[in-house]
Length: 105
Image (cartoon, rainbow, N blue to C red):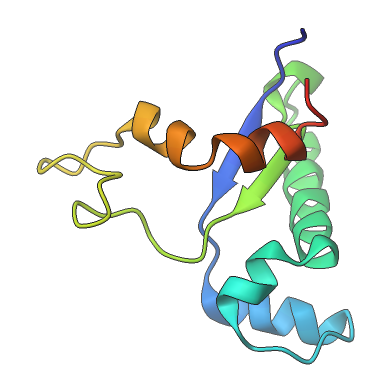
């Protein structure tokens, strides 16, 4: 097993729809777009570009991402009442997708 940095990204709806249209994907359904391989790959490529521009080392750069269509909230159990991230719950909620996105590493 290898440890790799993965990310759960909550994109802005308008940004994802605009990106999808630029890729020739006509859908505006945020849930569908967040699971579309081309959209995820384009978002990941942009994140990697920003990491390089910021001078981050390769081990500080996410190797894989998944897109989550809804903001984290207390209501969906991903934030505490003090609005702190519940990391364990976030990972558990997306474990299978994170493993697949990271290539099963």
